[in-house]
Amino acid sequence: MEKRSVFVQEIYTECEINAPFFFLGKHRFEIIPLSEDTTKFINAEEFSGLAVPFARRKILQQNTRRFKENVNSALKKKIETPAS
Picture 1: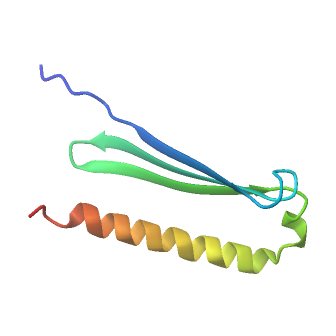
Picture 2: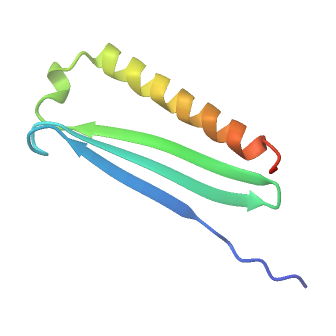
């Protein structure tokens, strides 16, 4: 029986404007191996604070979506490119 170690990596960041009660953005990346050649990647964001209802939700969502798509594409390209 082959022993395998399970590696789960999580990166968590916070960004606040003025103070956390005013605007707080939390970003989380999580990398979870599912099998030898399959990995689950979680890219999540959460916003809170008094300014969130006043932010243009559509712009906030579009910027977040664009950022996630760029990160996901860059990571996919990096991982799928053979090492030189």
